[in-house]
Length: 317
Image (cartoon, helix red, strand yellow):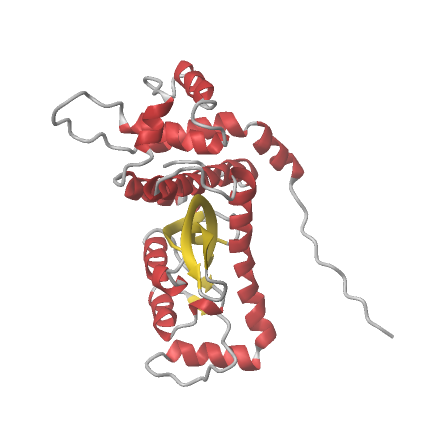
């Protein structure tokens, strides 16, 4: 007789969820304003004085959060100015030009890390993964088989590390699609370990490397990364590699229970793409990178709002 297995389901705190969703936009504006208060204004040198950087970052993230075009989201900017979140409303062209600045990229990455700080005492287990975001640009290549020119869409790759309990992004990196996941991992791990106490790090086989195993162990965490079929348990300078290989081979069920926390990283990408779109509207590469970082920052603020209501945390940036 065939044995039936019960499907495991997880209940939703609908009261907290409903409260977070119905109050999200006002709370989003408030938290975004608090985050932008950490943005320093560059020293004035010469020429026409620019609008405060804090106002421009606020407007850029709000534009991505609204999913509107630059012109149509201007009503949100005017309302934000009336409510005291902005000193002066920028025009739509100013926001578009600001998004094309290369010096904004490290600033947005810093704000993403800063937005995760309220959950330092909540998250201990982390997952890492990458996913692509399509752009509006195309590249050409010559098809030797058919002897004609073809076009393919250019897309960017977002690498991120997230907490598996709340889906907060603790560190991220935006690269070209050809950059391998293992190259982005050290930065994600280092920046997360600076603020969080790591217990476990889960990732898929793409991150299988003795060097990465050692790096994860060095920050006090246990790597739960499955092994490829041709992998062996030889140390070659990594004791943790041998220990985890034996756990994977002889206690596979226990290993996989920890490893499957990695699926939360896929949940994070689904949350970002379903809420803020899987395509990047910007035309230039720098603006596309900044737009993608704004999506991740907006996601983090929404996560903090949910946990403020559900867990009662204090959003102190």
